[in-house]
Image 1: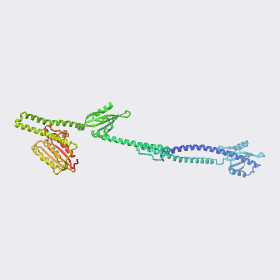
Image 2: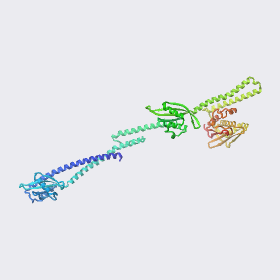
Image 3: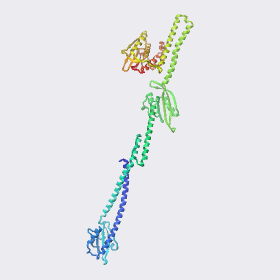
Image 4: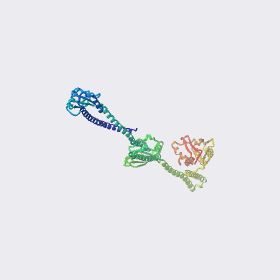
Length: 586
């Protein structure tokens, strides 16, 4: 039995028991009073009747047989006694006796002598109750007739009344309890089901439904609860879907997002922000903004939004680890429906690449202009000198024409490198892939560049043990190693060494071009693959370099789905590491 049913049963049972007990007491008293009144009236009538019968049997003497009294007592189921005028017992029915003091009895006889009808007598101390009447014959003799009903078990009659009454009340109570259990279960079961559904809904289980067949009084409530559960389930699903979309958008957006509540505590940071600023969510969530942000510029933006309640958009440079990044920060206040201040949102757009590209574009035009200006100026100057009469001197003319040819070659090399770089960077650039022996390619490069190395007294050696076959474009691959070896020879002083090694793994080949040259500074390593960037600008220009060779190398290696890395220490040489996949699929 459920708790609700027990409470209903105990409550109603207690009320019914109290009501029935009060009703039983009242009915018992009524039945008792009614019974005693009728009993007294009956005994009074019977006493008068017996007296009439006895008076008709004249004369009344002490010789009257006990048979008459016994017959009357048996027929009426009472005890009868007969006294003479001297108050002496002259006859009685069987077992009839009066346990009362003689003084009280004499006083009662005196009272009977004064009345004509039957009179009642009761003694509280002894509990004796009887009716009496004076009998007088025509001769004037008198006797006293006593009908004793105190000897009868009045208590048994009372007990019978109470047993009957409580049996009846008990039956009524049992019937009411049975009906109460039945109907309480009928009414409480739907309520219990609805309550259980409400509990499940409060726990977030919006699939809960009430399936019990309800009566008319709870059908509407059950249907309303099911409709409520269904609506909550649909609303929750829509909210979860929207929340998932919002979380996916926030955490996967390419810009850092930070939400700050109205009290200045950080409520949310997305994945991009964590990765960009290298912070842990647990160390920043819940913190005040001036503790969470380490950069003064960001704190000032937040304070400006809090104070002015306006949108703010600024471009700032923030130092992160060993680099400096450009950010465009967009901040806006979050205002609720009733113009309630909810907090602010900050969006960090990393525009470092855009700034870098913008700078590269500026540097590109500046460098191209500068690289072309020098040979053009030289060609123009020597041509004017020749036209002014210098060509009359054969030796001077030949010298000037050699310089003009050198500068023309330099311009041609620069323009060719620019065309190659432009072609490589185009989206429709394709490699002519085939099975290529890297060993053979490097050996061809060795034959081409060895004479140049000998001229500078540089030892140029190869350490290749296997064919090192890869799927690549042979011409482009040769162009990569020509540029790397040429740079190694250019930046290695006389008496130095240049050597190429290769290591073969399961799915890739690693080729290293090493030299013992001047090396590259740590701060310049990240820029050597930029267009026109030179570590030693004067020396590289004098050697005929354009500053585009390593940019071409990087693009060609990446076009082969490989990678190129640099290891260098200033004054101790440089090592370019090229990793090529054996099976390149473009």
